[in-house]
Length: 231
Image (cartoon, rainbow, N blue to C red; front, side, top):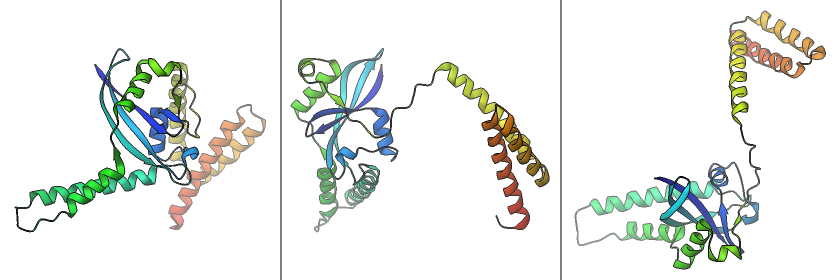
């Protein structure tokens, strides 16, 4: 038995599913949802128990908020929320460790409760039913299909086994070329760059020769910087 995570957005126009690809891209500021720019949206993080790829039961469902900036990104809001969670949590732990006294400092507890209100929400039975309907394809889903909340970055094409093998062999070739250039002197690198550009003019492998020329230029520039003390 394994675990799987799904994400749901409770938008004004209905429940939407966020793929793991889009959610991770949002977290790392590599994608955006401009349709929600400048808003605070309710999201449910759902952990499922699965077997043979089929969901068995919902193990946990937690309600959180995503704060979209003017570009439709959430990275800054997540970082700020994370720091606030850490600070309020540590302050509360420190307060609980102190010996009892007549004067009780309620600030740590109140600050933590404020953070919880601003960053967490509790899913109702109706919310959980909607999610369950989508997961197991029952009831209202047939009449109102849950759409995917889309980002701006298109999905990458699938990498086949043949493609991975080709990339592995190409990487080996690139490493070999890089190793050859690493040990060349300044004059040799200038010669390689010049001849590579000449080959690019008449060879069907022109783009590859241009790449070799650019790599030789880069190594030549590094050697010049070391020799002159400019880098």
